Picture 1 (cartoon, rainbow, N blue to C red):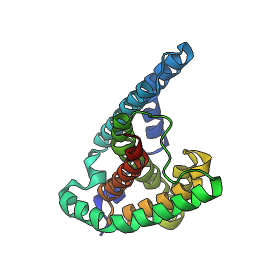
Picture 2 (picture 1 turned 120 degrees about the vertical axis):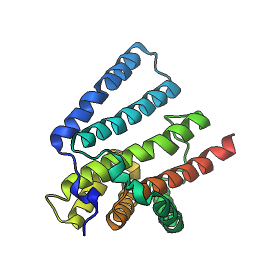
Picture 3 (picture 1 turned 135 degrees about the horizontal axis):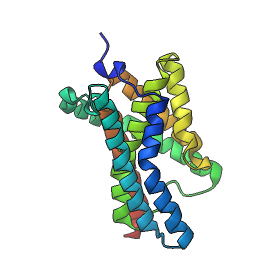
Length: 217
């Protein structure tokens, strides 16, 4: 029997609606940048707002289909899914660390480099550690993978989604994030809930940021 979340997906038109909802933020960011008013911290807070609007937009779209975004997170099994996330996390982070090491070796840069977009540690933790991982899971696992698997095999949809996840990040991180995206997609495929992939994604980002910022605090 399929999980209810397997039957719910958004289409290309729905994604255009999400872009329309977020367009004012993109426009505001572009205007501020043109006027020279944008600091790294302000950019991060605008992107936090962008994340909130994106999740809210998907929720409204799914509500129109009779569900809501809670269906993607399978609220009925939220507790067990959190426990499952904690169990699999060490293995996922181990692979992520190895890929970070290989990426740093290839590009000759620190394994855990400070994020240039958010020089403030608190802002970085809130934006990159909490908001961004969740909204990325909603976009890539919930929306894009959920859409692609209705046209391709689950395996090919996982590969395509992982490629998309990697290429929206800096080029030097593509190899690492493709593998990470594959693992997150496999978690979602296995459990049928964004709770697991989102929790693991958040934990990986929080530890990454802690290691990157701790020596500078």
